[in-house]
Image (cartoon, rainbow, N blue to C red; front, side, top):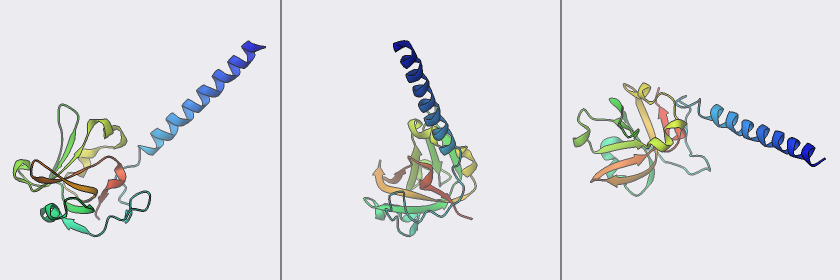
Length: 143
């Protein structure tokens, strides 16, 4: 009788784990659809977008920064950077998607050549404004 319950319990665990895996896979397949994200999940408004050249004046705020992505570069460590200037070293704004979050996104390199809005907390890193992108909802392709 105990063996029967062990088999049933094992079956339930397998079904739950499989269901969670399918749900996560379906969630990660739909980035960059261009939906208008006026608010972040949970209702936190991000406000009007500012040009990436003015992002530094909004450091310390949740906001939206817009610009034309010239290149999406993934480092050997797996971190992806969206470049808004020909020379990223002299650019006043940067974004990063850390390798640990990369599986949530589709083909990031398809953003090159497109105008985007980046939503999130604007911070400074090495004297430049930056938004760390953790989730696909933070990126909106502007039509």
